[in-house]
Image (cartoon, rainbow, N blue to C red; front, side, top):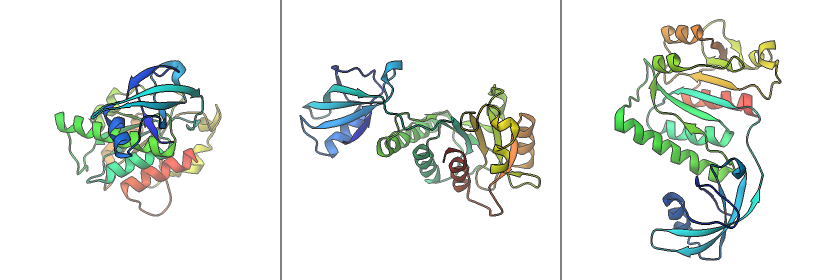
Length: 251
């Protein structure tokens, strides 16, 4: 059945109008009253998983559904992995958000760094984050995920580092090409990374844009506890490196 994100609280037997984006998608698919769909994304604690639903009314701009049986299925990663990324330019950030969502990332923090080509602020930044959220929603609808990753507001790297209060249990990793960086696989098998179980400790990855982070930025990240890791001898594009790191810890 087609899957749609619905952030309203979901309970069996309730009737509600779909959000505008989901309603447009239903109309594009030419679904009709009586057709069945799947909803996910309820905000209440008992609304984890997904719900069956039946379309009851089709208007010019609204779609009304009756919520059916609840299925507590989850397809999320056991480990929460957060990605702080120096935003790649053009449509590469869209592609990165889509693929990171499919892989199961928990949140994405878009960053502006010294070498960032993409510079965003104010209303333009807000619109971009809203667009990336819609990209993540569409990816969840397609891949079967029931939790849309959080898309944080755009920040500069110094502002983000200063604002963070990292939990002592979080593994902080910096994708780096500097000498002395350890292989990601080795770092994950350190005693500190596996003390509470290798599949459970949360990870925050910090990755640069095109050209990577500057030496000063890497030093600032190291001062906050980020350990440099490498993915191998090849130099990967910014979006490829971030996704390869996610595959390494979520697969």
